[in-house]
Image 1 (cartoon, one colour):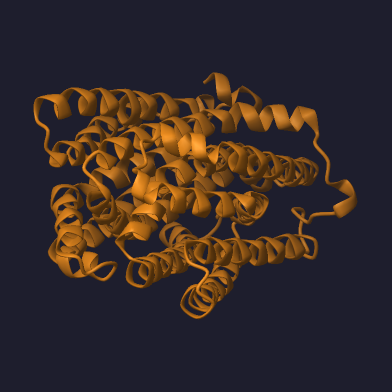
Image 2 (image 1 turned 90 degrees about the vertical axis):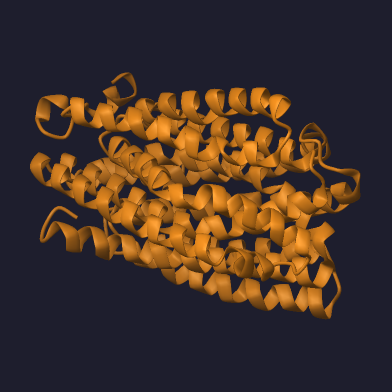
Length: 450
């Protein structure tokens, strides 16, 4: 990432992430196709009702691991083998502990959390079954993300792609086997996902023990270095808090959607599956920008980091908006793939028509966040997201739904708050030349205070 043509470096890194996320979304889509068409709209609503809650849990942990990725990428760029090794082994150890905790707490609190969200009675039992079984495999989910974060931090985005392809194919086969053949119902969908995550996490960890590089994992060295953990948390906690609080805001949004009934929930769930395809280029370029900026700042190539940031922003926005236009144009047909009920199609299409043409704002916010995280400025995205995507979004919905009891009022919360965050990020990015001169780049240990 520190040598060669900038556009080529970013695209070759982002493309495997894009393809990997594509396969991941495809097997998520298969889950919804099997659930919606074999088990019915109530089961689809049950799975949809858990989406925001799962993102709250996973988003927090993924955000925390951003701290380790930034440290590994900066240290890798600076060729500091000792620091890379300590960071890698601390990451694996903390992932094991976090995975065990999330499994135990998630299984125990599932019914209470779903009640807080106002999940309707007609889908409550199935939602509890799905979420509990899904969280039973929490350790594999966390370990997979930790291993893939290590690969990506050192510039290897191909390994995550290979393991996701394997997981995607396995998940499709198990979905059809468990649900369509064995008749295990919604529990079969969750079990298929857990097994797929277990396989991909295991493959990733095994490969890390065999790589020929400074990021190699030695099982005997897997332990927490508390100095490194403190450094990782200083960088990662702001992103973890940002992800979890924004996800909590989305749980509040989902609770307001639940009021409109299971058909509205199913339609919104189908749309959410489509929206995740717009996230593919956003996620891939955001991660690429974090790694690219981190490695080049570590190598003290400040001008290269700045040029790469500009290219990544433009590419991410263009690709996301193209997907948005396609979803907007073919929304009824795409939503109908998940469930043929006319009301489900109506609700999913209605949301698409409001939101899809504003994906460029979503892309700008996420990609600018990726640049800032690569520079160690993780607190800036946290505060911007908390204010715009949490406080303002919730306040808008709670007020406007009472004034105008129309579900479209909820949908408009997204483009409005995306616009606010993008505007703030853009002003900060233009006014603060944190990539232009060495003096503006914080040391890793000082990053959380910047």
